[in-house]
Amino acid sequence: MTDDAETDVREAATARTSFGVLLTVAYDGTGFSGFARQPTARTIAGELDGAVRAIAPRATLVRGASRTDAGVHARGQRVAFDVDRELPARAWVHSLNRELPDAISVRRAAAVKPGFEPRFAARMKTYRYVILESRVPSPFERGRAWRVTDRLNHELMRQAAAPLLGEHDFRAFRAAEDQRENTVRRIVRIEVRTRSSDDGDVTEIVVEGNRFMHRMVRIIVGSLVDVGCGRLAHGALAGALGTKNRSDLGRTAPPLGLFLDTVVLDDDGRDAWP
Image (cartoon, rainbow, N blue to C red):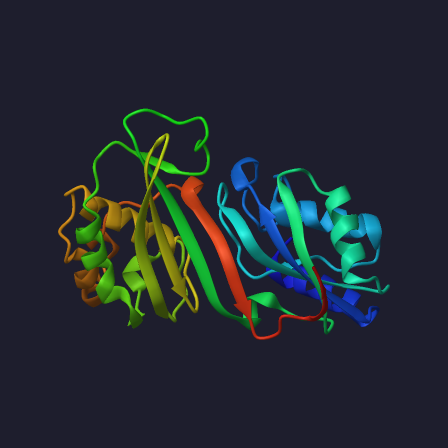
């Protein structure tokens, strides 16, 4: 279904409904073709649509705050939909979790006005990328971390990330198919942190900002890893802000280590549970 057709269906359904529901959803994206619904693929939105309509058959399609790619995970995706019946937030949480596969969990529900759009109400998003520094695979991190065999220089990575803070034109930090005209974004935090585990050293890169373009976080992470292992000069990321040229940056990190951790909205709903 095209975006225009989806909008028409949603608006027609909204006219018949009077209750809006806002969810916080967690999922393991390994077995899904991303968040956005696709006619011939299994997606997070498609599973949520089915669960919602099993409870409220005349509900609208769900609306997400972020269209995460195939293989990307979430701990705090925000999703809204409209219904013609009112249920307590606790009932939505328990009822939807009974309908959803184990890889998807509703963590919170709240009431919002009908037609509420999480994508346009998002004030800040936080992504976290997990990297396992190990010469051998770990079955416990499989699908949830990018394994690199090089030892990373974390201090160089922090130095390379620092110039990205603030408001800049991030035209170089997007996938080729992302052709939107406005490429100015604001990043308020990039944190490179490390911890040890039984499976190897773990590096987490946390990126927080107001908006992101397609694969922007994965391009930042891949470039920082290339800096950390000596494949890319540590000034390359700062330089790409000026040249606006994707070829001045490093590789795109794979999707499996990326988590959408939190989405801060203008309206967090009312009568929430838990």
